[in-house]
Image 1 (cartoon, rainbow, N blue to C red):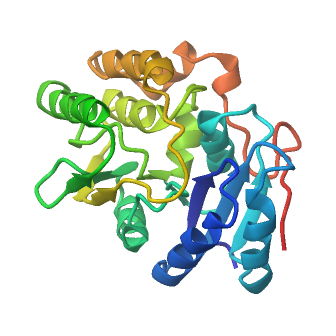
Image 2 (image 1 turned 135 degrees about the vertical axis):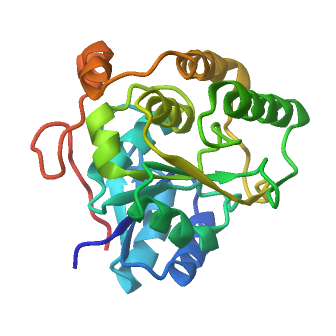
Length: 263
């Protein structure tokens, strides 16, 4: 059965911790779904533990990212590999609420191209995490909503659902950090396509260490922040301005799409 939702989880040496993450997702997601555990290398410590879960639930697949290392490439590869009409990106560290995956996916099914889980709208909250990073994120989200009217108060949050058709049409240019969420939100806004949000409570990870490099990732965020303030674009104009490597291959393409399935 073709899944309606593809849950994309970028991982890096999560080890046994991935089991609890996957169990929560499999328990809470009620829509027909696949869960893609996207890893950069074949010796990633996540793989054997994800394979144990996959052995008992065929919704789980381990997918080898061949686009290059890092979270942006893993997310990009996962969205490209998705078989569902909706791709939901979530983290392996337990910071996102898996109960909201269905709700985000249903918003896309109703016609929005980006559905954001928002920490900064009424009912949302951020619990823990670096204070300076949170302050920058909140300021960026608030200014983008008020000044650029992008449709969400939390454009920088990675926990989002996307129309896979939209993502493939506009292309994904991000190669650094977690800026894909901001990139696709900004592109949807420039195209005047619908963006929606629901409140979420984000919890700082309790296992492992964060690999978020604020100084290293900031230039990519600033690029897409500025991009959001530009005039309306047509799809043709957007496609003409993107680099060739941003073009998305369709699922099943022999080019740039090699999957490793763990059972």
